[in-house]
Image (cartoon, rainbow, N blue to C red; front, side, top):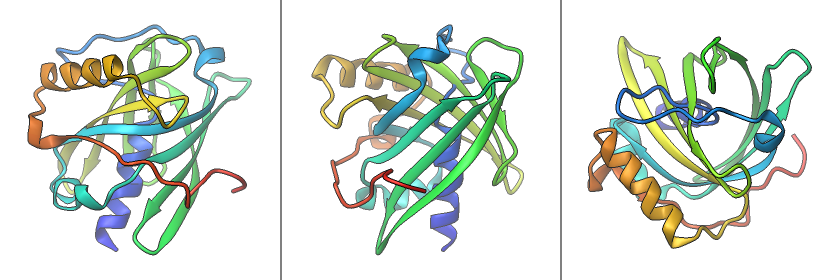
Length: 181
């Protein structure tokens, strides 16, 4: 249950942003980030994620841009035995490409890189138990990611201090989808 809670919180983190010293920031075009995404790869320094990374599969996220610039993000996350679905609201922080949510803990996310159509890389931080956890995620419009984009993700992860042991490509799945929340 504790792992599931951490998973939920970290998934929320990774949606739209990046706060990294060595990793750049992409200027977002909200119309291009809106819509359905697959979370196809990740890097994390969370012990809980690292201990359970072999059980993780691709998750789905849908981003809706609200009138005030906030982002409504809906998630479908496969966990052992069930499909967890929930929503969070992310508010702009004032820095380009950076958003904040206090839902399920304090999370900051920043868009690191995107081609504006097929992928985006997001860096997230979360405060939990007086620790700051970091995660980098690769979002793709489809479950199939070009090898060049996977390599880009791994390079960005390493530039941000993640190692091969903390970077992984998530396997595809069909049982947990964002049909209705």
